[in-house]
Length: 159
Image (cartoon, rainbow, N blue to C red; front, side, top):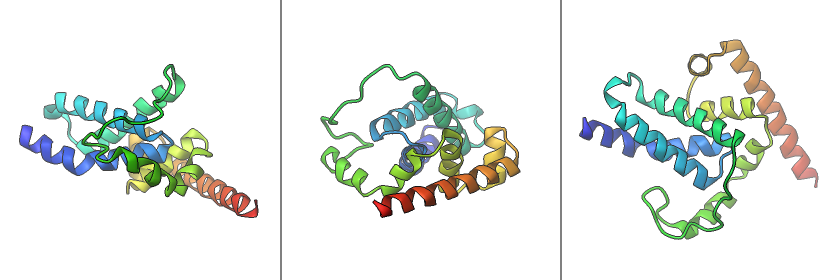
């Protein structure tokens, strides 16, 4: 069990952090939620049937709860390297290159959520199943998200 989970963790932790970033989370929040989610997955490893979908669902819900109940101030600087952030000083440069994240953060939560699942290579049918929506509702949210993103980019280019 430990070996299976270890392989799963190594193959999926960075993708999970990216998934949360695509939802609009800051890097440190995404890393924390991803790590907490993996701890929960480890504890329930024997009962999880679809681990990748499970961690995405749990992480997504954790982020929604975090956004709804923010009580602490984020740290200005990550002081030391971790396995999730091997070079903390490179984080700022990496985030700067992520223009997509600025666009995603402008979207309503449902559109961000559906787009984040899509960017993690889930199909509308899979997203609908995980989020308890219809496939048509997922496609509609994706269409709205894409239109809003294009409008935001055009506005930025015009300034």
